[in-house]
Image 1 (cartoon, rainbow, N blue to C red):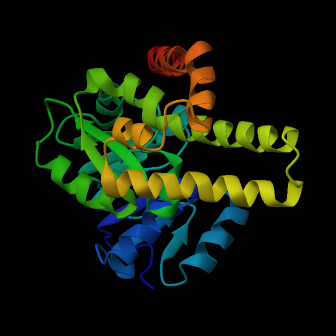
Image 2: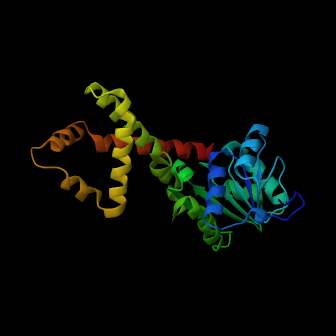
Image 3: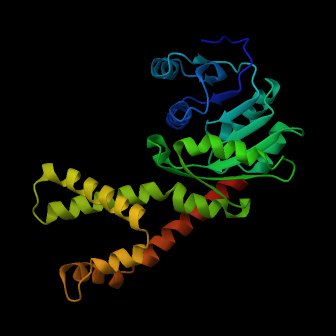
Length: 268
């Protein structure tokens, strides 16, 4: 294990779920080796957890000398942590905090540093995330290649203009919660239909997992829906309720509400 005085390629600041997920993906894909990476975590309890999961990695409460930093802390702490990373030598900074703009990163980092804003989602914890990335006009565009290489370790990476980030947050950032809420609703509906409680969660979990796998393999969600919907059949009866009660409008309103809240948080 390297020590504090070592010059690290990447320091992950924040050893929570997302930081640990990224670290695990980087090792799994062979993008880095242990001697190139350190983790900074203020919580002693969390440091112990991360150290146990990654025993060859330095886990510290202070930022060691580094060339790049991944900021995996809560949004209110980003500016201070970014400035500390720059003081430790970082020339590239990647933020995975929701609502933090490149302007905020630039103000904290100053000139001569490349900054990347990203918006991952929680399936990154199992290597199946969707992450949007962008940079600002004062960064070297090649920094996006670097960020994409890192973040591909935890799923799909999409480059979008920053003007679309609030919409990304409302759709894929908050989207896993919509899926989980739908799963809860299906489980409750199954219970009301009389199914035994012990079989409901496994059935619904496999339903969503299997359907997602089929969509991944085949694409064309509308075509898949049509293929399973016989005219006058049971599926058509269920989908008619969705149509009558405005499922699409409900989903659109949820995404818009999350998008609006993302914009508000970014402006605060």
